[in-house]
Image (cartoon, rainbow, N blue to C red; front, side):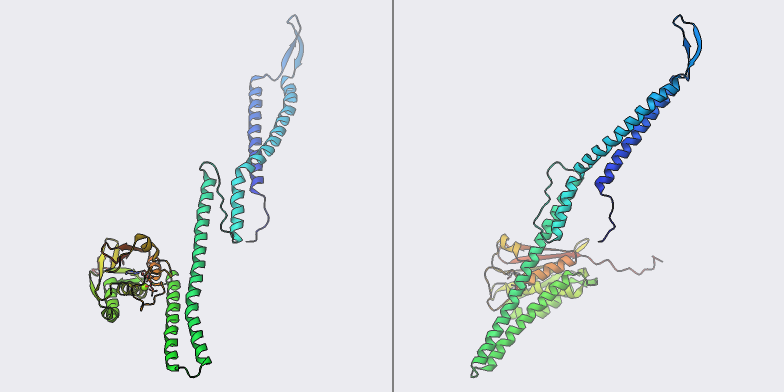
Amino acid sequence: MDRAPGLSVRLKLTLSYAGFLMVAGALLLTAVWVFLLRYVPDRAMLINPDDRPTGGVFPIRSVLLGVFAPRAFAVLAFLLVFGLVGGWLLAGRMLGPLTRIADATRLASTGSLSHRVRLPGRNDEFRELADAFDTMLARLEEHVAEQRRFAANASHELRTPLAISKSLIDVARGDPAQDTVEIIERLHTVNTRAIDLTEALLLLSRAGQRSFTREQADLSLLAEEATETLLPLAEKLGVTIETSGDIAPADGSPALLLQLTMNLLHNAIVHNLPGQGTVWVTTGVRPKTVVLTVENTGEKLTPQLLSTLTAPFQRGTERIRTDHEGVGLGLAIVNTITQAHDGTLTLTARSSGGIRVTVELPRAPCPPTGDGSGN
Ligand SMILES: Nc1ncnc2c1ncn2[C@@H]1O[C@H](COP(=O)(O)OP(=O)(O)OP(=O)(O)O)[C@@H](O)[C@H]1O
Ligand SMILES: [Mg+2]
């Protein structure tokens, strides 16, 4: 922002110190003068050594004023110089930390986020500000690194289908005798995968923007809808789905919450035991929240692996099914949607294998009862 040049804070503080010192000095000198006026008589009779009045009068006050005034001005002049010099040094010392914080801010604005203020000393307002600034820089640095990792991963994932398409086209171009039907079929698969990935990325970005309108969305209905849609896949993979629970009205976007439920259920089906898996989908109501739990049988997962799964492009170490070519965005989307709804996502490893995913969301406000009592 362009601002008109002004006095520096150091100069303003210096002038305030000096001004205050001058006012205090002037008050003190006035007090002394008032005291003198009160206790020193205006004039005195001149007397001889033999104690007889000479008839002459001595003007004590005017003599005193003649002596007092120049000294008072000297004291005030000294206080002014003392106030200016002392104030300048003191203000410099007090504002030192601020200069360090300003330097760090300037560095950060040029893109260097690794610099920290790290003010030494005991806690005070400046240290508090510097520490808060350091914490903000650390968060920002982490966020930027995460964004870079995300962009690199996304580009990598998008490049793979494009590279496969290119080599398929090259093969077809180089050898016209090739079976084009097979090549077109493979191109179609690769292309679908690229579209799915792009759509997942778009969804992730839209959900993160929190630009949806909130309305009442019953999680139990969404769970039923997701189960119905994914039942053919579950049957194909030999997985049983058990859905139960109460009406759970969440406050949010029905479309995004359906996506969240679908992703969780899809994961529970495809990352399950082959041929004998079970998935339990339950919904519940708490005083201020509603809960969706998706639990499935499966391989045992370590807590360390579990804590990394919600990061974008993170897949489990071993693929249980090679025919499910996931990109590792499903749980990242669930996490983003949950956060956009001010909810919490919890992943717990089941002792017998598989995981339990719990999503807790704010409960929708109760609709008006309509009994007319409010009128
Ligand atoms: N219900 C589950 N049971 C066991 N493992 C799971 C479950 N859900 C997720 N995982 C593990 O977490 C990883 C990340 O899941 P995520 O949904 O983010 O990606 P994905 O399923 O591999 O790919 P996609 O982007 O298609 O969803 C999976 O690869 C899997 O290893
Ligand atoms: Mg998934």
